[in-house]
Length: 365
Image (tube, rainbow, N blue to C red):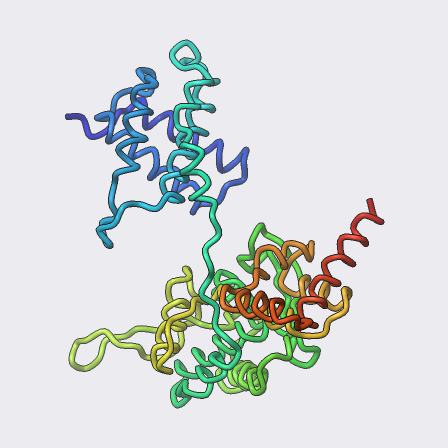
């Protein structure tokens, strides 16, 4: 059985170039698409794409729907299945327009990769996120050691995420030059910071956790004054690894380079929460935490807009819809209070903010 088709490899290479250069897709997305195509090719025994038939799509759709996760042993989630099928649908749509394939495939062939409406609804369903409270994060910061330079880096990393809500890729790529302690902000410059959608914006340090800013300030001072790191050096350097006298690889200090991936950042958070006796919360959950905190404050529409911009959102509705859903337990409390005839000032404030924001958007239109 052939392990690959030379013709398929050539056209896939063209497709990946199309995604990268014409569609602006990043490497992570293209790698995911490559995996989806590889799964489909395996199911067809690497037949040439020119021999594509709708029956292949139907059979693959059934097979991937019954597939199990190698680690958990459970069936793949509806969202994962839909993502794979969506990749294949887009590929066949593109392929049907390419020279040499037009007479073999039709654009409508791609429709056979659609999932059932019921499965699509399940895939789109919003699951409640695991979000830490500010009290839990304060406990983590208080329990983290700070004896070694690596421990102080890790402590500063968690503290920085607390007062900025920066995304994990940004945390891994910040430089010292991006931080202005005196004026209280970090510049998320997309030219050198791995921001979402390559967006450039300024984030002011949020006054949410006493002591967090001091931790960050001490860390920046240590990097600049004690370690003599310069503006283009990473804010959170990677770990330098050396060989001990016993011939064992071990951490020896801070490297001159930053983290190339987000894995080490997540590891720091995981270890910090576990050491504090708390369940693990990923770095992204800090953004949800900050929005939930904002919703408890008596913010004016303008203040809520500023909070939203601080997280990199152009539209405050993005902040409220993506990060502002009321947690299930709080939902229950609110409904029960309504049943008892109690007014809820917090929800009234939120409703006022949303209404005022919508009104202003309509006035602009």
